[in-house]
Length: 303
Figure 1 (cartoon, rainbow, N blue to C red):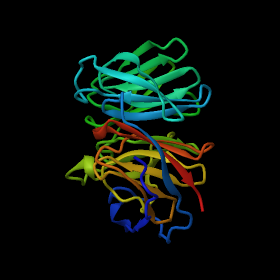
Figure 2 (spheres, helix red, strand yellow):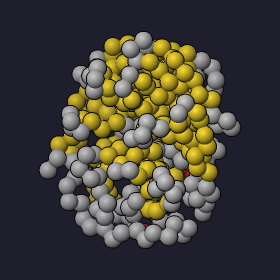
Figure 3 (cartoon, one colour):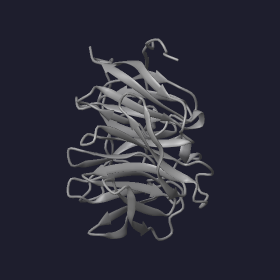
Figure 4 (cartoon, rainbow, N blue to C red):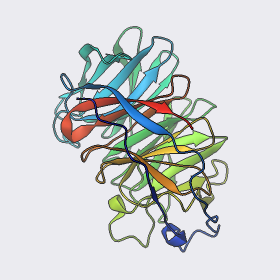
């Protein structure tokens, strides 16, 4: 079913989301300057089972979707990856099986990296098979995955409050800091790492995440912007225009913001709005809705 274009609602948030243990002050905010309008183009409703993440492969012009199918921490072998066309056609519902609870996805050439509870899985896209499994010592809930320009792969562990890194074929603990609680969404932009996490003052870390900026060299933390409301932030995606799309799992929404600009509501679904992907060249946003077993494609129009 095609939904009508959404009425955009600006949500104002003060500097209260900034942690007391982050020294950098939050910037002042202004009214939204360039709010995108999202219009649903298609919706895949069959063949997916608890889809958590989606990533676009420009070389093959196809989407990969991770499906948990079962408990998010159950090592049951039920998890799988799907291939979906950019026109919304299910090409191969169970393109790659043999996973447990696959979540975050990151693409590098012919390699697809998948977080899978306590290991990072490397998939050869051409062969359509798993070529490496990288166990993560002590991991319990590996979640979002991001690639650094140097080729290193970062993955968050939401339950143990850690960030791990794959570098030169070896996994290592990259960050463990009491100011980083229940980390989930992670991405790189302009040499900095953006991370959705709560802090040590939070009583409910999974529902009070906000976005902070991390210097990869020093691991210094700062608040990226006070305009992204705290909540159950799942994913952060750059928009290619200096702004960001942010998904909220429990709040069932997608927000858009730019540094110093108030966040605006741009899409509403049901609970489970998960790890989205925005393709600037297509001006398309792809959003898994986990609890509904759906993948939604939105055309993005800029003022």
